[in-house]
Image (tube, rainbow, N blue to C red; front, side, top):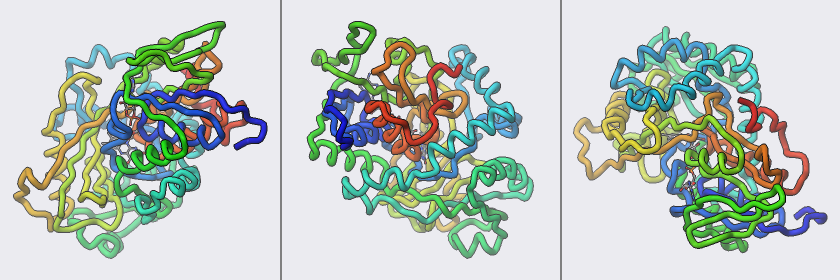
Length: 421
Ligand SMILES: Cc1cc2nc3c(=O)[nH]c(=O)nc-3n(C[C@H](O)[C@H](O)[C@H](O)COP(=O)(O)OP(=O)(O)OC[C@H]3O[C@@H](n4cnc5c(N)ncnc54)[C@H](O)[C@@H]3O)c2cc1C
């Protein structure tokens, strides 16, 4: 604890990876912290992600090369991107910003900001992992991206160059080198790229529950309660209104992931937050397991070796927060995994698989919102991490803890400010 810090009451909304990382770092700075979540910790989007701890994930989703592929993807029901057309009117303003975010000079700036947020993911998590006794969940074996054709290998060069420009070491692999690293990979994959600095989490849900356990053990409070709004006095937030009543607060942190938009509006900020829904399928007792996460450049999914089995996760579906899941997306991921790893059984019974859908909290420029609200200096936003919330959770927590204490954040937070649109 900073010796000059006076303990204060902090309320964090959301017990996903971002909320729990914020709560943990604020607690370590010596404050009394209450986390409010309508569900149990880690049961939102943080439950079922691909587990990638890739500090190399600096490439924004809206890249010039990506945008040109979107029309083709949208016409292919088995493609990595689907849009439920009924949702298009609601999504249109977001899409417009998304397209504009893909201009080359903006992309370069977004990538720099993402590298600062994500590049030190292992170092940033280290104190929390140690306190939570969660070392067994974190693996550092790098990750592979694999390609079925020279054309798709070449198409990805621009994104890889953006990584290299930001200090990421990327190794291009031949057919034989790929086989040596991952013998179980289908011979349909002709080329690969290895990024060695990265790692993965063996069970992302368990990571959040371990952080939550350590947080409560060290005196923090987690309450299962939906948040409805705030109380204000003299130009400041003074409390958070939950289902059971008012929780007094000196500072408030909004980390409600994809559901943050309405609460942000109550704090005076209108944000273009939408959701890129993603799916996973977990195959228990797989006949083969990769040694490290393998990403398909064409399918836009990752196959990650996890504690509970082989998890295949990814793809994007634009359909908002209310539409029911389309489990054909998970089944498609299973077929793609069978294609990637020929040793997997062709006929896999439902008892061996589990399927999941989650809501990525997505901003059109692929950057989260981190920092004070425009109207209330004692309310901080920490949401909108899109595809990289697991990677960026710890640095977000470090930033928010510094803001609560009024000290300089560890990185420049200007790119993440709420009024950038
Ligand atoms: C298929 C898929 C694969 C992914 N792979 C990766 C990956 O490999 N690496 C990576 O870094 N990221 C990945 N992501 C993204 C990552 O999972 C998210 O960015 C991250 O989980 C967001 O965390 P969060 O804490 O902001 O949100 P959440 O985990 O969704 O937590 C938000 C919490 O807020 C609570 N909440 C919402 N509204 C209220 C309210 N009104 N009152 C009380 N509580 C409320 C919810 O119950 C929830 O628990 C992936 C996502 C998907 C879908």
